[in-house]
Every structure is written in C-alpha cells, then in structure tokens.
Length: 211
Image (cartoon, rainbow, N blue to C red):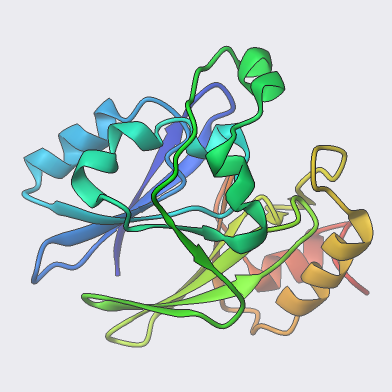
C-alpha cells in the first residue's frame, strides 16, 4: 500500500495521497489547504491524480479542492448528508481560519456500503455521523489484502472530533465509535488530525472509547 500524509492548512489537517504503483494512478483524501506540495509530489513521481475523497464537509478538509478539480473533474466523493457543505462552504469557518473557498456543484454523493473501485484498491464507505451529520470513514483495502481506515474527524489518536459545530451530535458520535470498535485491534487508522494510530491503541488508551 502506497500513501503519503500531507499536513495542510491552518489546522494541519491530514491529507492523504494514495497511489497504485503499476498504473501510477492516485487519489487524494481531504485537500484541506494549499496543495502546491501535493501537486509537486504528484508531478515529481509521475503520478496521475484521478479522484478525491472527502470525509466530511468542514472547510479545513475542503479548502484546497479547487486546486485539484482540473485533474479529477467531478470524480469527487462526499457523504450525502454533507453535500450541502461542499455546495455552500461555511462563511463563518472561512473567516475563522482566514481562508476563502467557493462552493462546488459537480461531485458525487456516497452512502453507507458504497464500494469504490480504484486501480490497486477497494474503498468501502462507512457512515459515521457525529462530528457532522454526513461524516464518513473509508475502509481501504489494497490488492494484497492490507487495510487502513481513514477516520476523518470521527476518531483521533486518544481523542475524537468535536460535536459543537454545525451538524455535530455527541450521541451519534458515540454510536459511530461503537461501530468502529467492532474492527480488529490491528486495523491501522489514519485520522483527520494528529498522529496515526490503530483500533487496538484506541481501545486501550482513548478515554472516549465505548466500554
């Protein structure tokens, strides 16, 4: 499995670039800031960006999306219940973070259980509301069977996403964590902020983990 983390924007949002070594085709998760470092890496490594995945619609996860649209067209995926955020990004959050991001009309909505096939990968959509109403995680499996979970702002290392912003619901987040708790301890987790972790580490150390 080939991927690289790019901390982006004012909140150091984790953006993840995945690629297939044979076709050199790539997809990016959560373009949350200026994308120059990402596009430089893509060019230097002869990659072809084909798709964008969004874990949710907050501005710190979509702020750089317009820099990538020319590469992917409408091959942009977001949870159905957060699609309005992509069409109409929050002006309050833009002011708070000092960024500007116009809305986007051409993209694709995803729901629970959707399978996205990509060269070298299978990507399964898991609806995990709580941080926002339409938050999703992506379970990514490569052709050798290795798996990682892109958790967005649902789950962090020893923490969870806040629920006091638009679309937040602490009870729904608790239910989403119970769902993630069904995965094996060895599943590697790539969160929207902070360091990488695993289900096992969170089961042992996260004070918000369901008991």
